[in-house]
Length: 279
Image (cartoon, rainbow, N blue to C red):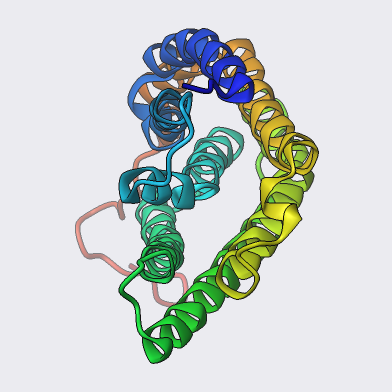
């Protein structure tokens, strides 16, 4: 039985990467749970997918796992951006930040579900002509939603560089490292997104296209980008491994309002009032 050398190489790489990823998740703890949990999830997803494709197959399970693609990376970047924003400016409304995070997750999930349904139905041998057309529409709609999600992440990251908080805050530097890491990943995620959209559309319209089976295109436009994104995030996570303690210290020693010690001036002699030089 043939062995896919690329899958073997990716399997080995992600087995190595998942170890520092787990370390970063442990060090950042609850403050960075939303981001680093998805970094770990992506590494585990790639390990499972590559293990299943060491011997090439086209089972539905493999197609579903392969179709998830970029979603975990977008989740990870959005979660790390959340951690960075709160570290740079603790005065941000945390509840509102969580609300926007949930809305963003809903957008990405919608796109991912549309893509999975469309790809599975297109690759089904029993699909009728009308069903295939519907599946193609679903795939294109899902791809469009993922593009919108990436654009939202770009806009969100860029406006996060503007902050009213003091640069002297202990957590400001760590938050800036995480923010810059997310910004550095945006071009690589963009290239990976273009490859995903092109592959999904070709899979539904021209399933015999040589682009879909090109190892060079897969490596240059997908594999390398994903590894670089994970590496950038992990390096930033290791550099900011003490951020959780810094944030906790800031919360513990949050300055209290100053007391002036002045008492309100009381009138002498009870309610006596002064009128024209006479009491």
